[in-house]
Length: 253
Image (cartoon, rainbow, N blue to C red; front, side, top):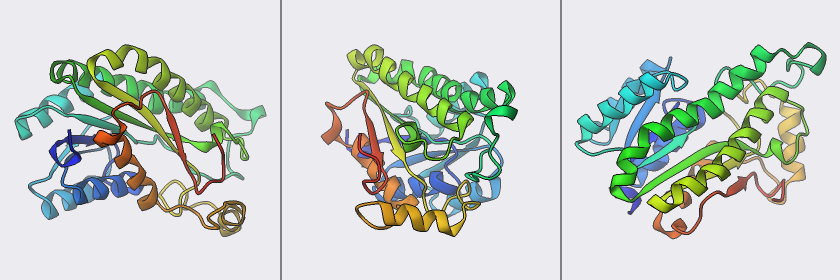
């Protein structure tokens, strides 16, 4: 299925990286379900600007019932089910190494919040999508990860561990989903310049990253979003359970 034939859900799709992903999909002609939790004004602006392509819906992706209602509402709106899911929403996080919870003060509440935002949310959207994707014999799921799993240069214990678990789930889920024509992959970025989560990062850190990458620059949200299109396109139909790192070549593998 071509991208311009798909209905794509982007969780957290009204701001930050999610907004860049939404714009990339709009450019390619996809219809986009923009899920948001608090960014109603930004979501409404998208809907007004692209009324034929955008459907907005407020839902907490850690709540399975709300996610099911989101999928039903989108299906009613477009008269077709969702074909692809981008699990992008990030729960309450800021890339500020100085303010991160140190190991001595780390609590399970802090850890579990990131697990719910990453793994539980992915389980909720995958389960909500499954029946229609199985019936269609087609589905694409892309989970947003981080290169910190491979290179934890700043030990964000909660965020990185949750994303590592999401990577493991991506790989195990591929075994269950592949028989139905459903591909699930992960796209992992480095620090992006700039998103809501990375705006607290000092300029010196961005400069250090740029100097360390083969491309000699920090990747933008727009560049990262464009890479998602590969996983949605027919050219990746034989690719599942994989993790593609998009960080300018900083981390290998």
